[in-house]
Each structure stands twice: as C-alpha cells, then as structure tokens.
Amino acid sequence: AAVPGMEAGLTFSANISGAAPGISPRGIVNGASFAPGDSPLAPGSIISIFGQGFLTPGTAPLFAPSVPLPTVLGGVQVRVLSPIGERAAALFYVSERQINCQLPAELTENPVRIFVRTGVVATDPVTITLAPTAPGLFSQNSSGRGPGAILNQNLSPNSADNPEARGNVIVIYGTGQG
View 1 (cartoon, rainbow, N blue to C red):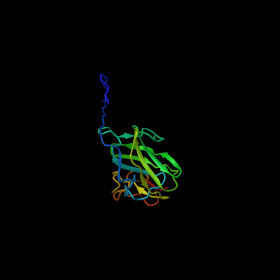
View 2: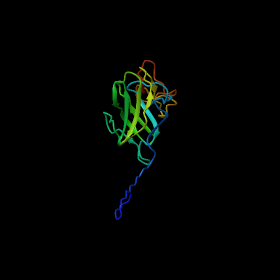
View 3: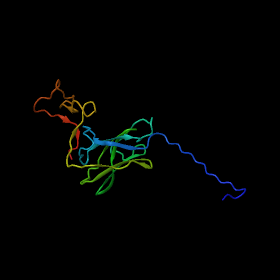
View 4: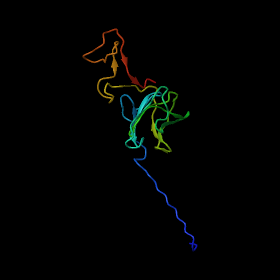
C-alpha cells in the first residue's frame, strides 16, 4: 500500500556493448594445425580458442608484451579446471573472437574444462580431452594449412625451391609434443 505523501522510485541503466563472451562449438583447437575441436590436446600445448565477446568490439588485439607470458591481458583470463585444481593459461594473444594461449604443462588427467573470464563475466566451461602428445605444425602463413613453418640451417625458409642439404639442421615450429 502506498503511504500518502511518500514516493519511492528506483531508476537504473545499463550500458552493454558487444556480445556476452562465449566459446564457439568445437572452438578450442591446436594452435598450430587448427585440428578439429574434438581432437585431443597435449599438456603444455599452444591452443587457440575461437568465440565471441572476448574483447569489446573495436578494441585492438592485445599481444603478450614479454616473457614470462602473462595470465591476464586486457582483463581477459583463460582458466583451466582439472582433477589437479584450477590453473591459469599463459596468454600470447587476445582479440574479440580469438585467444592464443598455452595450456599448463602440469595437466595430467582428464577431464579438463576450459573457460574464459572477461572481467567479472565468464563463458560456460568447455570440456577438452588430453593426450600425452597431440602434435601440430605451424604453417608459414599461420592458417594451419600449406607449407610448414620450417627453417633451413641458415634460417632461410625451407621449401621445394629452397631445400636443406642432407645432413644439415632444420628448425620445425610445432606444438603438442607433450
């Protein structure tokens, strides 16, 4: 019942820009090969997480400024839940729709669930499968397709037109060796 002469009111506003953060279906992949999202990943691997709302639309992508890698970039964190507890992933890169990070090397057993925290909002956790190894090779054009990111002994790109001589050293960039 209202009391004569007494008025009460509540006014509030919210400013929500961009989509709520979310990880795409099958959106956690090997960061080198972009192997399908249901492929196993190895402890210590570089992974890519695809989704939406990781950064506010229009925000420039963020890169790790130094080593050791940070676990927070622009208020964004990747959290990893496993039987050994909760860990933070080391971050290489964060954009509105993609995160590149490194799984903690101490992960040993399944199940492993990953979620992204952006400030105080978190995505739903996504379950991934661990394997002792899950190798992937980086490609020259960073798409996960085409020629591998392989250097000859003199640090020139290896290719059919520029092969390395037998017995010389090559450098192969990959992840997931466990």
